[in-house]
Amino acid sequence: MSPIVQRPDLGGPFPEHIAIIMDGNGRWATERGMPRVFGHREGVRSVREVTTECARMGVKSLTLYAFSEENWKRPGQEVTYLMRLLRVFMRRERKTLMDNDVRLRCIGRLDRLPAASLGALRETEALTADNDGMLLRLALSYGSRAEIADAARCMAEEARAGTLDPASIDEETLRAYLYDPTTPDPDLVIRTAGEMRVSNFLLWQLSYAEFYVTPSCWPEFRRDQLLGAMKEFASRRRKFGGLEEGDVAAASTESIEETT
Ligand code: FPP
Image (cartoon, rainbow, N blue to C red; front, side, top):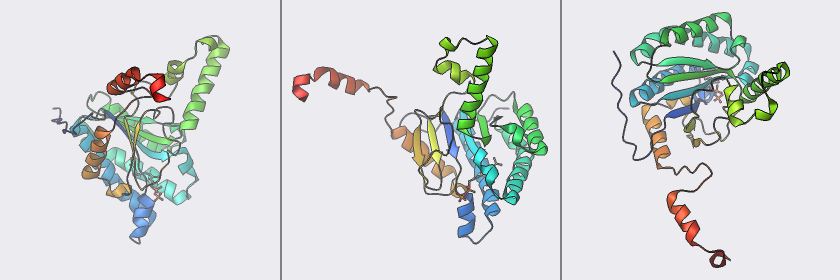
């Protein structure tokens, strides 16, 4: 049975695709005198709550930056802990994903993940493949420059083999070689823990996304903060490089003499 989906009234446009840079687990734990991994464990609760709330609110896609290519440089113990957490999460959350009609898809250089974690991910992807509620994308061992480099290599190989005409390559061609070309770009990107950077996350896909940065660390980011970010999004004017209707009218009635 499909869960009841109820879109909140945000007073403006609804973000169909939300992407989140989950930051500040370590800081959250350190501030409480706890080891960093305690923050990751608490961060899993936020993953569960935000995923469930987004699914219930009718968000179509949610992309979570769970482990970057650069995160492999962290101390071995922390990496091992995160990989184990991922494996356990994949097994434990299957029921929640199924109950909320969520489909899982992972993006990134997944061949770098330990076999047990990758196996658990693949099993959950297969189990949830027919769910048609929200798409949950986990970016794992993910780096946007690596994604674009991987796409460029594939295109170059096809051009060499004669199956791709270099003269025909445009933006849509390149998009087709990215890890997940069919999911529409994020509308809203949220970053927790206050840093004002994109950290090699979805550089191609975030071209026109609205940014929302909160000082709250990821383990503190729950339903209320999520709704706050969505409301802020609803109040923004998105122009995609163009003009809104009122601005077009103003621009066309203003003569060059009037402006000089
Ligand atoms: C950033 O905090 C967070 C990460 C590198 C990993 C995110 C992982 C989780 C939320 C838990 C596991 C996720 C799943 C999907 C099971 P940080 O350690 O960089 O924090 P800091 O900037 O304060 O050091």
